[in-house]
Image 1 (cartoon, rainbow, N blue to C red):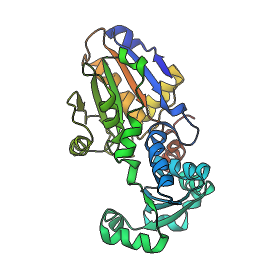
Image 2: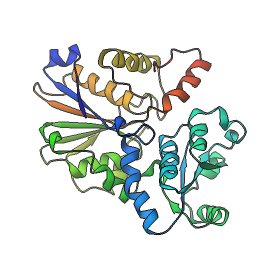
Image 3: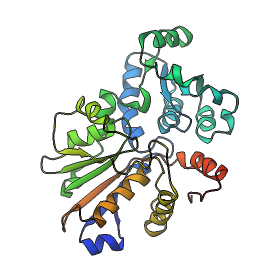
Image 4: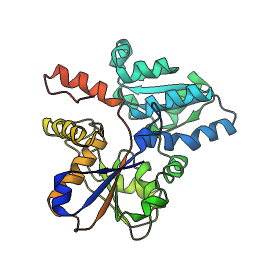
Length: 298
């Protein structure tokens, strides 16, 4: 569903903005995570594997979505979680406790060990511990995930000049690029610092009608500011569209800031992809509460 956003700055600059509500696909496997898991689940079943093993942090959308996907498809799920300090108090973590409720088992590892998650030695240890499994990378990005994300855009989206999406591991943006029209411009807004994702995205697409804007990461992954929190609350109040502080909040903030600074020509029709991630709000609010900062309204 594409939802038109009516904010005064858009009218003033003669730019149209719509939000594609991928977050409404499923209550637990929302947005790009549904798209990324779709063909990976089918592949695991076709191979006759009854265990999915994957990776993520304490508030990972991918971990939450994989747990529920495993539950409804009758597949055991194992999450290798970054941060061994979580092993004693994960039940107080909204994301992990929900994933456990949906049947996921955990292996907590140190941050140094987690950095080796792609090494053969590390994976061999996991295979010995958990047996044969279908491995999905951190964030869910692989060729099958990109294939799923190519289904985000539909026929009705051909009317847009510019399509904007958050970027985590790059799979979602690559899928959008692959299914975009030649005359459409695709802009990715990373939640991480740096421009290193460009190389990763190029592994999945040969098109050149895209760019990465690194100005709106707010300090990096899961980093926020009072400015961002205020914007998220303002945007929901004005549009009734909830956004999360890791991905879509930064995306919409960036788009509207670019509009304000005349980055887009009058008459431009922009489509923002709402990739979900709303489950992470509860965890972020716990962090904000400890710091005596304003909370995200839910």
